[in-house]
Amino acid sequence: MDKRGRWLFVGINLGAVAVAVAAFLIYRNLQPVPGADTNLEGTISKLETYDLFDDVGYLPKPNQRITARRVVPGKVVYDVTYGIDGNGFRAMPRNSTDPEACVLLFGDSNTFGIGVNDTETYASQLAERGKGKIAVYNFGIGGSGPHQMLAGLQSGRFQKALTCTPTDVYYFFIIEHLGRVTGRLAPWDPHGPRFRLGGDGRPVRDGNFDTPPPTPLPDLDEGFLGWRRLVYGIDGYGTREEASLTAAILIDSAREIARIAPKARFHVLVWTMVDDKRVAQMEEALTAAGIAVDPVQRVIPDYRDDQLRYVVGREDGHPNPMTHIKIADYILTQIGTNRRSASASAPRPSGLSHDP
Image (cartoon, rainbow, N blue to C red; front, top):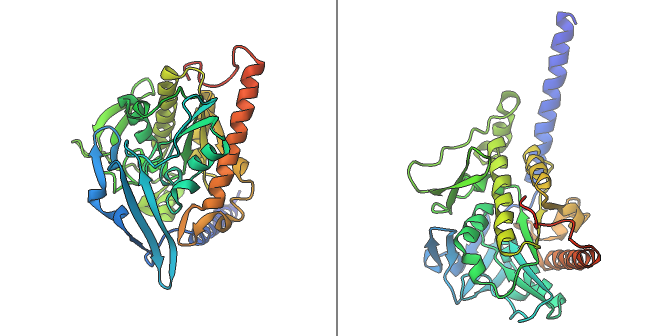
């Protein structure tokens, strides 16, 4: 290739990068992300509403009603109250004492149910649809990540709330969790549990985010001219190391579940609007460990194409009541399929009966 051809080749590729970056920036701008025009009112934003803990970082104080009202100029996006039970988790209907299935739901504000009433969360909807045959525990913690799940399982916090042996466990993953596991995308969580990867590739508890020395900021300059930083800024979705740590934390969480319930099935609902190579890296590690990965397209096929239909509003991207129902229906169908599969084969061919 002559000199002129080389410059043409470079120019074409630079042009392609510029077009891709511009298109992605436009795409992100169209997404329903809370902005400066929104205002959150109520006790949810008050420090005295929460307690600090060394294992999970923080939880709402037990046995209370939290008020939450999100407003924008000329509009109330939502005005709801969150019931908190005696363990600091979202209020749920009373579970059956002899259920046919025992379901644990982990995640952040999407699982907790920001923007919807107690009876409208997918946890409550699943319990209602189970007609007394399914016990459901909502362990969603607003603003949390998979590191909170693992830390709470290791400390026994979640197990203490159970009155049945888990049969199905779901973790609701969003792409921001890649940055939350290192504390980078969670300024509200300074005392969150800190993990690092050990020499064997498994997560090792390393104090809390505020334990000296401070957690180093990951280098987000991956790719040509550090384009990830140009596009994402400091809020980049995640690095290779963060994806590896996230996967390791989820896999170790599955191990913790397997200790108390060897036959429990562990699923990760991957709720993302973009196809990201770091999420793909995490999914590959989870699949290799025998963990079921359920993409959002499988739960709601047109979610990516028509997101505004499924969220609280353009000002708040949390699932709306209709979406919570769809998630509950999906999990209910899976539970039925898993039970039929388990009864048709012995021993059960999948799940967490082995060490992932």
